[in-house]
Every structure is written in structure tokens, then in C-alpha cells.
Length: 185
Image (tube, rainbow, N blue to C red; front, side, top):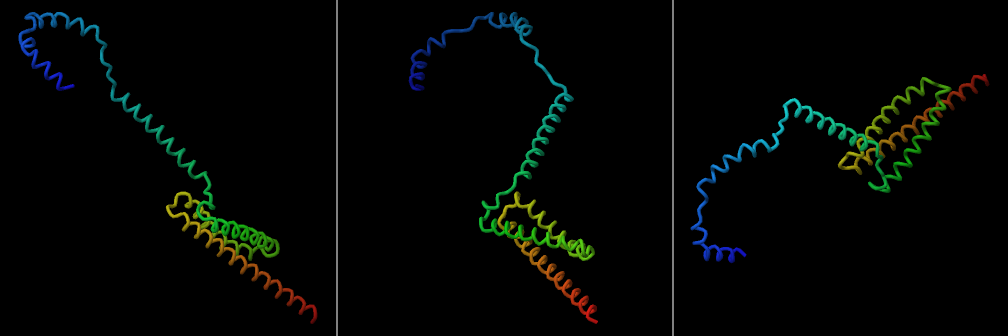
């Protein structure tokens, strides 16, 4: 198409060169210019204060959206089975075991509250660490590693609870034996 246009211009070059604009063209433009300026709409300008208020409003809306997004991220629980199904089963098993052992330990609180407080203080610290790991899990780049740490924590809690319950059982047996011996004497 450009080839045809170039050919057309070459063929009619003389027709284009021979024509001149009217001599009074600029005078006609100057006469109509005030009318064109009056009919054109004035440009709106915004003050700096207005622009800053709009920008601050936009920033507030974006910040509120970001906070909402972060809260939504924290509320969604992580599906442990998607990370590793075997680890998810282990975590569930150990969590149930820890819960049942804690229930057994709470029974000691009635008979020996001081011993219960001492045993429970260690468990509270371990539980805090477990909860911290659980909070880190959704945002962790290596979720499987965090899940393994959670399982290790539960496993150690289970072992500790077993030891504590064994100590309590041994203590109660020793106590019964001493009572039986004193009754026999």
C-alpha cells in the first residue's frame, strides 16, 4: 500500500506544489481564536491538599485490605495431610496421646497439687513451643520440617508425661508400702 501511495504522490507532485494557502488565512484564524477559547471548557486544577487527602484515603484502604488479608491467612488451618499424610497421622496420634496423659496427670492435682504444678510448668513451656510451631506452619517455606518439629515436640511431651505418671505411680506405691509397714508395726 505504501508503494501505491508513493506512486500517487510522484504522479501528482505538480498538483500539490501549485497550490498555496490563502494570504488572509492567519487573519481568519486570529478572528476565530477568541471564540474558540471562550467555548472551550476551563481546565480543572486540584489543590495539593485535595491530592494529599485522596492519596491518604487510598493508602488507608490498601492498608485495611492488607490487614484483612493477613488475618484471613492466619485463620485458614493448614491441611497436614497435604503436607505429608504419614506425618499427619503421627501428629494426630501423638496429640491424642498427650491429651489423654494430661487428663491422667490432672487427676493428681486433687491429691498432690504441688507436684502437679511442678510437672505442669514444664508441659506449659513445651505446649507454648508447640503452639508457636503451629502458628509458623502456614507461612513456612518448609512446612514438612515444621511439621516434623511439631511431632517431635508431641513425642517428647508424651515421653515426659509417661515419666511423670510413672514417678507418681512409684510415689503412690512407696507411700502405700510405708503406710502398710506402719500399720503392721
